[in-house]
Length: 331
Image 1: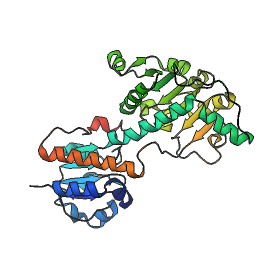
Image 2 (image 1 turned 180 degrees about the horizontal axis):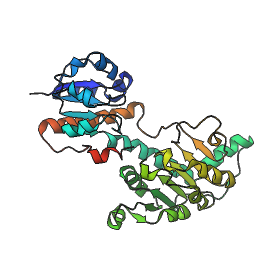
Image 3 (image 1 turned 120 degrees about the vertical axis):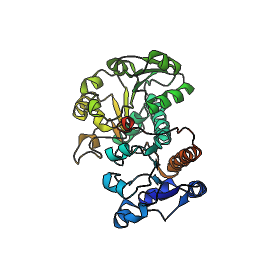
Image 4 (image 1 turned 180 degrees about the vertical axis):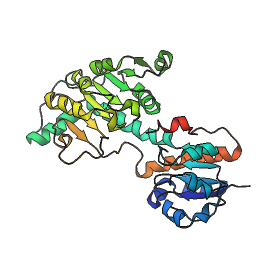
């Protein structure tokens, strides 16, 4: 028998993540009991949860605490069509043994694509030219640039996204070095990556790209002194989390080292406070957290949720199941 299912997420997220193909596939796999719900609609009508065996969710998911779970006694699995599940899960959920999967792998693909695009552009000093032209009102003269051939790219952390970036950089003739104390030399070598210390990443690389998750242990891991170590005309890219960087220390060095460039898709806080130097520094590029899945890219996350449900229904091993230990690391 098909499990009874509900969609529970923001209305806008439902339209983004679960398109016609994904909805049709879910309707074949499950008995969808009601129109899409939000956490607000379920709070008003919790009886809808009584027979739900699986939930498809995403951004805007409810916090599935003991009270929520008491209203959902049949719940067995949650397929989360986005990245971090931290706001959704609870101790009560883990104790109940409810299966949780996340589409974090799908969300990592556009982040890696965005990062590689920024690396290639930065090795041509693209942002230096763009910002100088706007600032000076003329086409800047050409200058010596690192270029791609033979340059060094430094990755901070070789988690899923860091590995995706390393794999995509194989298409370019660059040297890739990385800092990750949890990765063995053999695994790094298989990626074509040389493991080095954190200071060495900043000192040797023409471009440094940060991929460290935001944990209590990683807050302000990247300090001002790391930026001071960087080569002339080097670029720092952050598509991870702003809190991993000591932004005050970074800003201080960027004010002194105008040859450096910081390309920041994330900050802390996000967005930066009004009046932050990040808005006005001539060597900072800010984007509003656009590296992850946007618009039609979100359908890939919905497809991952569908595929996980199909494995679940067939009794197959799940590919993207999230454990309690993992949940904290999915930034």
